[in-house]
Amino acid sequence: MSHPADHATPAQQTVLTVRAVLFDMDGTLVDSTAIVEQVWSEFASRYGLDIEEILRTSHGVRSGDTVRRYAPAGADVVALTAELDAMERTRTDGVIALPGAAALLQALPDDAIALVTSADSTLAGIRMQAAGLPMPTTTVTSEAVALGKPHPEGYLKAAAMLGVDPADVVVFEDAPAGIAAARAAGMRTVVVGDAGDLEDGMWRIPDYSAVTVTAVKNDDGGHLLTLTL
Image: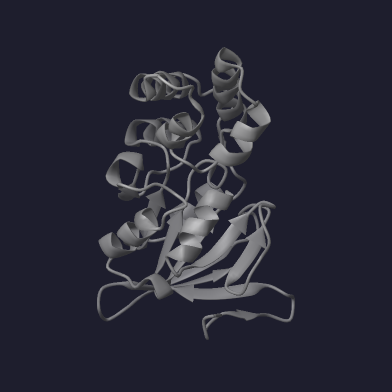
């Protein structure tokens, strides 16, 4: 259901009024596609797996969950996951921020935003730094949840940490698993890129170039954020 404060201007811009903004990282704030595909291609080649199928299902999902799904019987899932994670941490060439991401993060109050990513805290720090983006104080990384995306645990945990109701949150996501997690959490969702179909309470942007925000301090100490897409 659409939020009563959501509306379109005559220029077909969408205006969202929220109390907090949650961001996925890979593909949403940071373009790390080349590295992700490189690492998973090496994994697929080693075990004779279908790389297209792995890439189709792994985006936005914790690496350990993908390894567990595709590794051959008897494989050491923990060791394989650690190896793949180490590979991703040492490769930062080509990692860049999506257009407008840095300006949007800087314009948002730090106590009204969170990063919710399927990467672990070390990789998240490496990728955000490589992309030149500030790391939000509130982060929910892979090791902070029992169930990864598409389960809504991460997004619900981030909202609770910020002290806001899920209905007062907007999520920026790019991957089907993350979009499903945000929707299951009952949050409005802005899809960055072309993944999936839009439903009520969902919008789409190519990047953040045209996104603007104003923030007003509330009497309760929080913020009322108005985003124009």
